[in-house]
Figure 1: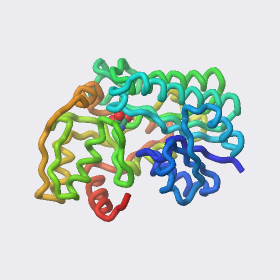
Figure 2: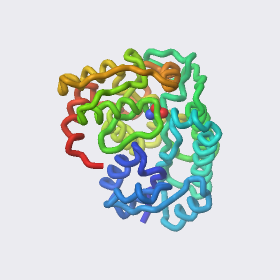
Figure 3: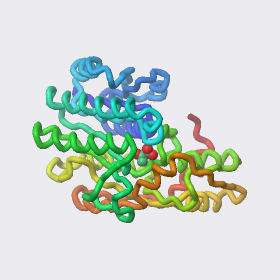
Figure 4: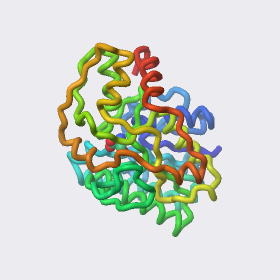
Length: 315
Ligand code: AKB
């Protein structure tokens, strides 16, 4: 039996992606891993194992013992948390990727998935419709680690034939899991405040545009990329990926249509500078051309869907 290993499965993306992968491949073929044993309790329909991704030997043993053939490596320190402990973020983000890539080479694994981010772009990048190929001078440790990681992915593909695939995610928004430590987290928190009937204080200013995506689109993009025939995956660093772009004021207004009493104020903090260094919007025509990427959700459609499901969703 050939298995799929998810590293960092209990995080914001992993929580939903793991369920989707287990639904496709069958729970017995999927191993959800995380450093936090308690967080693994939510995975009822697949295998689970506690794993610290920095424990290279434990990772290797798991891959060999369980006949793992694909790895989704999702564990990372995100942009805002990374700025609080830059060397820790760099070590975790880079070393863990290199462990996984080396293992893929040595054990001849079938496929690797590793997420990149709009954080690879920086203040000198064109801000509107940011192209796939352009100046990238990220100024967060998270962005620097994602940019270096992209180069390593392409290197392992070109030098050793490792079939590694990657997407530059925009801010991801879902109601089934909470983000941790990102600059785009406000766009998840705002829905929780709205349904609790509380005032929302945005840590970004009202006109701060960022590229964003609803989780079902992010899951679809990830699985579409992983299922695409190898020859269609022409970019082995990471693909630009886009769905929508909005500011705190615009997401607030989309919620206010459903919750007329909802209120907002703006109190920008250190995350404003990070947001200012990232693009407003992304050109993802390469993903659309190479493997047929299409998004389904606009801001209005996402807001209606979240407000329909979140009030009765329990964590
Ligand atoms: C963050 O805000 O750090 C992440 C990202 C855009 O990669 N959500």
